[in-house]
Figure 1 (cartoon, one colour):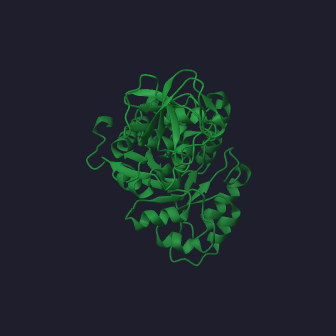
Figure 2: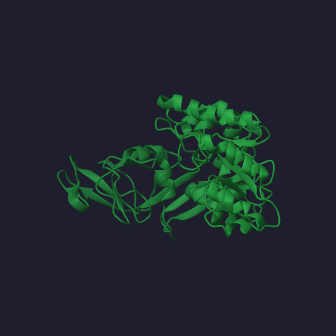
Figure 3: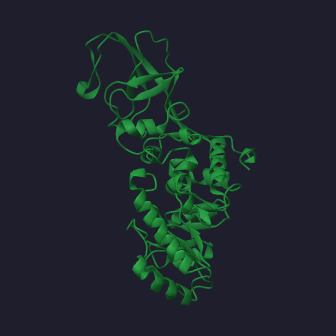
Length: 371
């Protein structure tokens, strides 16, 4: 039996959808489940959400086909478009929707030999400069989409906010919203999607026909200075392992590779079956919290491939086999990300296949309290 477990709380997922619904005043929800549902399990998350959302968004066609193969029939948007012209018939056959972000993609759709039109979104670059058609070229792009018999009408308008989570850059977000709204108003009839997770919380003026929650679905905050709990969300993932050894450590004794930790008092050292081979970051510094038996204790020494050290304290009563929470219900993943110097997205995404995923709840959940 695997020691390291990611407990996925599907009731928390449904709770988070309810919180999102309470903020969007009628917009429909595109649940972003790319990258294996942000590391939470693509099919399990999508199936749980099927009662509560109107569509899904993924990055790659392989993700979309996995969802179709699992019986998901609701709309699926390919946010990155497609990578190969041969994908177009597959997109049509599987009733997928695609973001067109360049003239190259549009030309491939124009010349495709397909039995029915493609459901498309015009991806407008409002300022992120990653994917999308520039505002200067957007009118010409729109006209060609309108003239193309291989593009289903009406089509959508989509863009992405790149600083919605940074209040000090509000002027930039306002500019992006204005560019999007100006184009929308001059080209009526398109269905629209702009707000991401931070847009849902901070920018109601970005709430269009559709909103696209990503990280907040999973109970994680898009902001550096707030946790998901601060936003009324519940963490969907709780990462746990167990103590596999307990050692007495005397003052002055050193711990682990590179002896990077030295005890400044007599204490008890716990060895946890969790390491960078499981996806816990090696660069985690001394003093990073973990949760055990109702209290925080702190890491001591470098994280190893399969194990890590925690200082249990001189009066520890813990036992081998006791559960240790690395992040989740008691300890926000945002806290660990802050200690490590990364973002929580990366932590939940990088768990390895040594971690056992355990899914709980979800079957009888509803959104009554948010209606």
